Length: 256
Ligand SMILES: C[S@@+](CC[C@H](N)C(=O)[O-])C[C@H]1O[C@@H](n2cnc3c(N)ncnc32)[C@H](O)[C@@H]1O
Image (cartoon, rainbow, N blue to C red; front, side, top):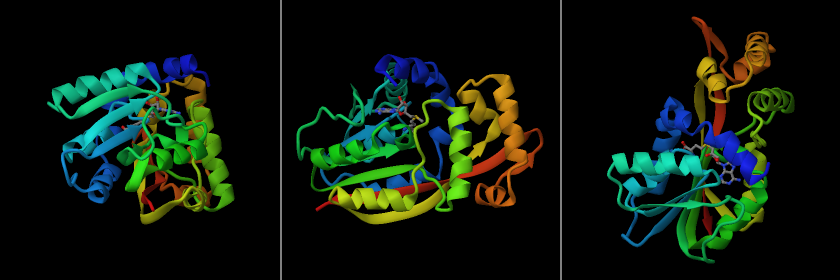
């Protein structure tokens, strides 16, 4: 996807992401906060990749890191600025760049973070390589994102559904594949927590504004999913909605 296509896809959704309950607050934000801990000095730097409306960056700024919220889409950064101002954050800056190419010097940052964005990154390996480059020795990469189950048939169902619902979706990777990649790039995964991202079907399809017929077809596929899929994703019909949960991995990997 070109930068212009990216802006068009994500720009149109910026206001929705700012209001989306699962983005504003969920377990992963609290887990990240626990793994990050407060900055040990006021000169520690953190960046957030694919910041969207900024909620992970606000986490970092709230822990007293000098924080740079980064995203490829300008409209997303404008939402981050607006909400950051409303929250009175003075240690938050913005930068428009791709996660695969970071405009920061080698060994200059204490934390590189990202939440609910890595499944959109076109080149995950490049992102990890860049994170390793910009981190100081002892600095940490901290990512929370949806992951695919290890069972390949359940994974295939998830990926097919994700791609029909969101054409900016790239891949939910298996936790085992992420762990390998991070280790190959010289980062030591010292913390790893599994949690879930709880979603409600109606709001989830509304966020990507897919045609009504596709949304109805997806609804049928959720309700008629194989038992193993329903169990893996906790699929449950509730009133006129469907509740489900994507597996989520939160990890902290340190540069040796
Ligand atoms: C779901 S939103 C992020 C949610 C946000 N991090 C949060 O915690 O609420 C995904 C964001 O990733 C951004 N994005 C996708 N691919 C990107 C890339 N390769 N580089 C930088 N940003 C990217 C999109 O523009 C979008 O703002």
